[in-house]
Length: 338
Image (cartoon, rainbow, N blue to C red):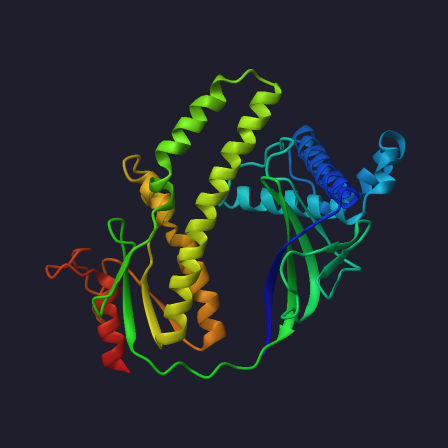
């Protein structure tokens, strides 16, 4: 079967290559802000095609420096703006805002992108070395998204590749009850305890945030403090992501069916007393990872309403008297029905 997936590598750029990476990230940010301002002036969203046509006419008079940058950087920025307005009008996201310099720097490229023995060739940038081996890379490259995280550069390659149909997993049906004291409890009694990455580093994070707030704006000390704070946030994200990858891989490889509660995470996070713990848990990312890994390994993910557990659709209390919730009961029903 044909599948789409991504390969992510950390880049090890030379000083010259890093200058071009920063140039492209800045150009993408500039194009994004230009497009948002243009849409706000018009009082309505403008399509990416129209934005690019107007941009070509504008840049010849006002941005001659743009010749050093790949044409893909503004094109993809305009597509992102169009997608953002579509999501905003559908109620899935807020209205697009201006991007700040040095915050979530990224850009996307298409076209002449290749991976050759530990190097990734990017248009206008050249062959940048990767810190990891690329020998497992396989597929037709659709696009490359380059992102800066703290002082590191990463490239994510979206590819289309042929993947053999997985052999269905022969294993038990299991329900997953997501929680906060324990990340999850399986219907067979197994507990998955997350590292609680944010809670573990919360005091240190609050301390560095206070120090950062006291620094004089636009000073070197404030910039140094911002990098220190960003590095701590990065370590928290990595610790959480590592746990989620290990947990979802184990479930997808060993369970034939995994039943997960369909939780309205965004609505639950509006509870201010629980919002921090819910965000730290990463329930939505857990579900996303589990679904695509189930397709890879031959297992299946089934959803379950937290309040509907019977085949007839009767509503019951979200937490049952034996301490288990809908996921564990639903797994028993699926197992019985075969």
